[in-house]
Image (cartoon, rainbow, N blue to C red; front, side):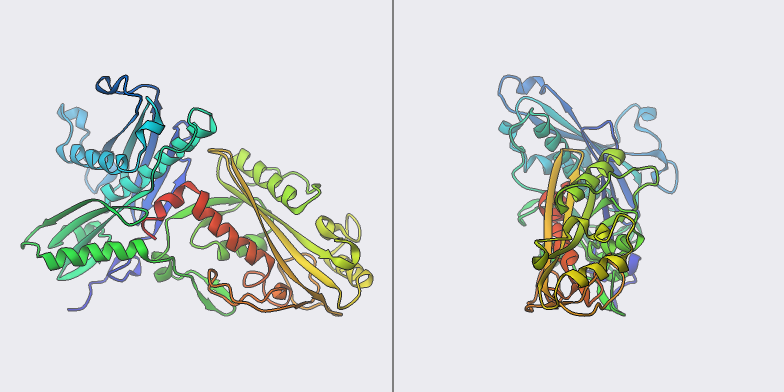
Length: 463
């Protein structure tokens, strides 16, 4: 039997595109807008410096959840629970599931005698709202815990792992991952699988809607969910010398982090969007002022811009600073690469001065520092990529960097984590989105995102 046509051009094993936007509700201790296909849920975490009476005096904390659907979240208006005088039974079941799922990774002793309330409000429902709520609620929980650590109210994160959930089902005899409403409504089998970041099961809910569920079908659905847990993000196809995320490739990728990029350079913004895909890179708002690049190092300049963008927008921000270091010139022009020939120098003037002062064949490096700033918890990190080689007599290449001599690479090596052949020093012969120091720095940034960004905790369970 042929597989049914799916939304977003997905195969049976593909989840819907997932985007998690942290800091969506500024007044909450932690919050995200969780988007999974057309399903969208606002998840917030609120901290109360007390515990339920039955827990008082134990020295441990508590985590609980509430779930609701807004009246316009479905095709026809859904009446609010208050008008019926009682809470909807389905909502009670789901909020208990959310609470159980998250408590499975909480260290209550480390949390201390405080309660974290997680509220999940569905804006639009297109299937999988409970799974989206679990994933989004965990991100909001971690954001709130990070804020407690940053405020000095906690010594460490009271979390033992990460949690995410995904639905699976059998539709027209075909096992499918992440059912939308159209698929869920006609599924013979419907399952929700909650897993930790290391692959352990927290809860499995499986229901045979029409015919009994066989053990073989259950195993098949669990394996489908586990494959989504284990699968690494797929890179975009390379076409015409550029990397582009196709719809099918994007549907395989991890939960996305949304950044604001601290630059006015449209060409650079396109490079970052390509190389950081599937994470979302937003343009810097026009009213944000960036500080002058007057630091003594590339890292200082990059960090200053990222801090300014993060402070002005309240969003996770990334920024870079880059330039040429010549061994023959004692590391010059360095941070003055864009002004090497004078404050108002052109790229051509800067390059001509470098070629005039540094002998052909001398050692040079193209250096790019990348800064990451998360205003939610004060996290700041800087990584650096270097593209080393020797200076050729004539320039080659175009676009991307301001000062572009020809650099002969010293050696070649494959970088398996980037999926490409990155020959060191060849960032000046090839488009910078494909090779060079910025690419190396962004590769490190991707690893930083996985280690540091709050949303990456959830994406660890379902890439």
